[in-house]
Amino acid sequence: SGADDKAETVARYAVQRDVYVHAVGAIAGRPVQRFVFLLPEAGPVSGRITSAMRKQGRGRIHALLGRLGQEDPALAARAEDCEWCGYRDAGWCPGAGRPR
Image (cartoon, rainbow, N blue to C red):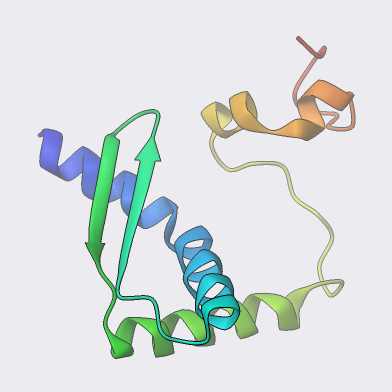
């Protein structure tokens, strides 16, 4: 259903949302309360950001940062992710074929 597709899309962007929420909160000097994404495949998506979500997001960000440099880079898990990747345009990704 459309709601399931939108929820799946939002879940794929969770880390990006977390980074934005924490960066804007740090710049503003106060916690972010709401977010809005304008996603190409799902349209506008908004939601409330709770303190529990901010804490969980911090944990996710710290875990990802801790893994940097410890693993070899991997190709995208989903082919459609290559559509938006700058590596493809620059010709840096061996799995993406020719740049557009």
